[in-house]
Image (spheres, rainbow, N blue to C red):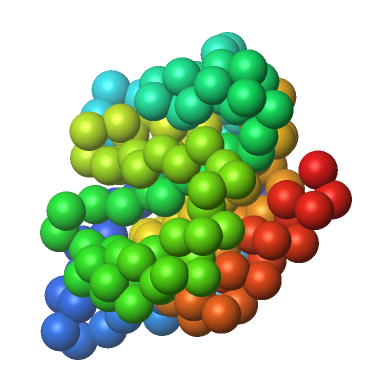
Length: 160
């Protein structure tokens, strides 16, 4: 049985269920949740190929020049959890201090859906740390405490 070919779309009411609960339900049925992108077949979404899309490609170029890691914040304007993450975590002084050692880029998944597909972003907010080649070395989906994120960013930077 190949469930990945049995694509379906779900709309949900955030007043009734959370995005995380919806994804857990989809996973429990044996499916893999994915971000839907107009004009891109489901099979093409499963295996990202080609060059890293913008705006991440530009961030990777800067990372190679400056010898830094890339911090990517995948968000959407309509995402309430994204706004909470911005206010409570990303604006924290310790996180801001840690981010000075990174190339920071925000990716609106509605404006740059190919970037979300390329990095298999299925829930927001999603935070990634990439090395200068685009390889993912850290992922966080959903809320994360400012202290935890700052510590993780500092430890990843120390290793690289």
